[in-house]
Length: 300
View (cartoon, rainbow, N blue to C red):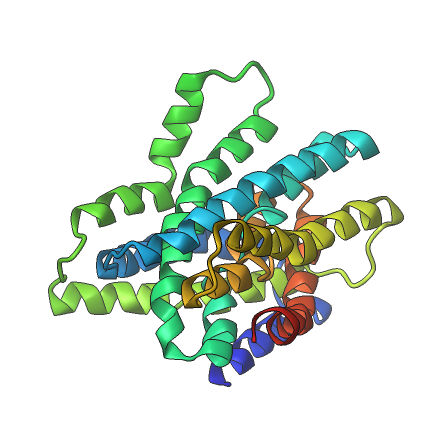
């Protein structure tokens, strides 16, 4: 319950600060940069070395990648059919594909399935969405923001120098190891800033009324993320005959809200910032209801 309150409070606080014009219009970008360059790498460095492996624990990341690839394909399909502008297509390729598997996923899923779900949850998050953010996410930003002909070398350079990806590579070196307490405490303090800063930034950019030209891409994104994505995960579980806690956690994760950090990356890259923030913000609000429906009618 404390996590639910933190999510709601910080998100609403950001919206209130926006309405009272407490900060400058550039503040969301500043907060997003702090999250991307400091908070998220600290979280990755802190959590990745804690992973332990078993065959069943590979079910969540396997489903995660199938869902993300399918969602990306659907975004491209709808975007081309409906003639979305390039910036909007780039935004949807991030926020409609990458799920909020940790910041919203952890409190929601643990509330439904208990603490025994956390191991599977972290596998989905760290070997699924975390890696996808550093690789796929970097590719999307590079592709949709580059003005000229993009080369493989430029993509590789952007991937290798993206702070979360650099943190991921370093973290793999420390798998199964523990940090000195002083360093671990520092990482924990820095990583704890991810949720409040990212949610306040989202609240600062949330617009309750979108321009009419952004309503259709908004509806497409929400439909893919909260409805189609978990249905794809359910289909995968059925095809492989999986009916265990690992597969149920994967389905719930697939149906979580859009990733806050994906919205931050989209906003920082200039990919429809207002729309990106609206999808993340409304997605979090809607996911409280959609996750309950998914649990009680599909997984309980």
